[in-house]
Each structure stands twice: as C-alpha cells, then as structure tokens.
Image (cartoon, rainbow, N blue to C red; front, side, top):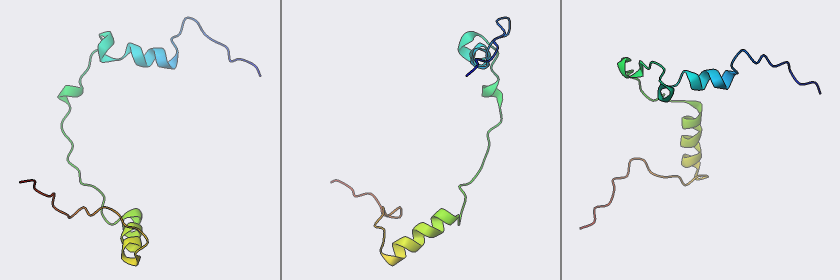
Length: 72
C-alpha cells in the first residue's frame, strides 16, 4: 500500500480544525448566534413501532407519563 503524498507546507485537516478553535485564539461567534426553536419529531416509525410493541405486550418499557413518587 502506497502512502499518500504529504505537503509539509500545508496544515493537515485536523491541524486546520484545531487552529480554528476558540481555545487557540481564533475568533468565535457562536455566542452571537440566534437561538433555534424546534420540536421533537412526532409520529415517527420508531415511535409507532414502540407503541405497537407495547400494546402487544412484547415490550415492557418505561412509562413516560408516570409522575415521580414523592418521598415524605
């Protein structure tokens, strides 16, 4: 197997990534980005499959609607 040619004057892919990081003094504008509002997907194949398996009794999963028990 032949090794790929390496250009020593050009930084590698990972060197470029690290050189552009905030900790290495590169400018970082992520704090200025606007927030994104989104919702979890609904009625996906996996959600429908899980619902079906639970209804058939094949899968005893956690109950997301259950309220936590209070310890008094």
